[in-house]
Image (cartoon, rainbow, N blue to C red):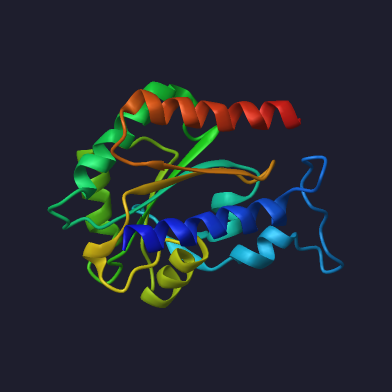
Length: 200
């Protein structure tokens, strides 16, 4: 399962890079309909966060942002909570850059069970601050988003512990083990942020 996921994620990284960046590292131009290739790929499928706010996948969550994305489900008794506790430490290390320079996105692989209310309680347990979105929504929409991100699984327990760290503006996308030492994850995130600064 993990090998298959990593292969899909490697393909995703290549596809997204090609979509977002040309040879000079600049964002690909919009098409005649005004949509960038990235918007066409990810689409604006609607999701819902822990506050009940409807958010568009591309326009509200990814466009022009550095993002840290991981799959999970709130009733998980395995790796989900340790992984998200690790991301909570990443949030703490990044400080007020979360919500400004970086957006953290945790997408439920069990949207039928994970209501916004349940996710709000889960986020509170992690002391999540503004800029960390716990996402659910209609199962069809959530499954679609997970597929676009290379994180879809048929069985919720089979979700990966891989975190996607990407810079939509510059086209730099990386992956990391969500249970890796916090300082390693922070270093990767900071490197992706730095790439954004270098491309301005």
